Length: 106
Image 1 (cartoon, helix red, strand yellow):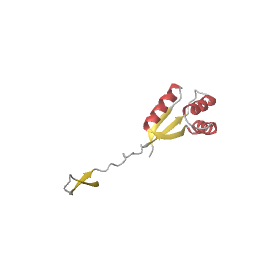
Image 2 (cartoon, helix red, strand yellow):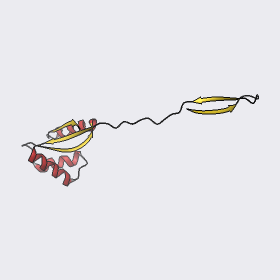
Image 3 (tube, helix red, strand yellow):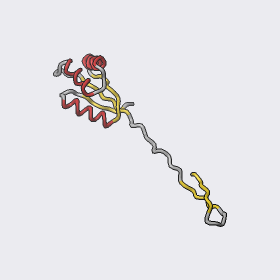
Image 4 (spheres, helix red, strand yellow):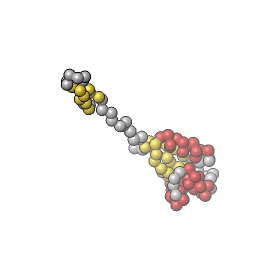
């Protein structure tokens, strides 16, 4: 707490005023969530890559690599973000008929 002294009236005495110190609000980091792209036998590779580029910040080469990984292994990690953004991405990919799941990062 900070203290401030100021003269009172004409008596020459001082009064100590105690003011609470304010600190900046604490910002907690949101826990990370994984956004996972799953392979499907319906959509063409080019369509999947275009959707990844449109909905994420991934560059075309990175989007292509994620699509190929999902095609070969069944699933690929697209990105890690906070839960609300992961949920939004899941809905956006679903609107493009692509399967994306989200899960908390370990």
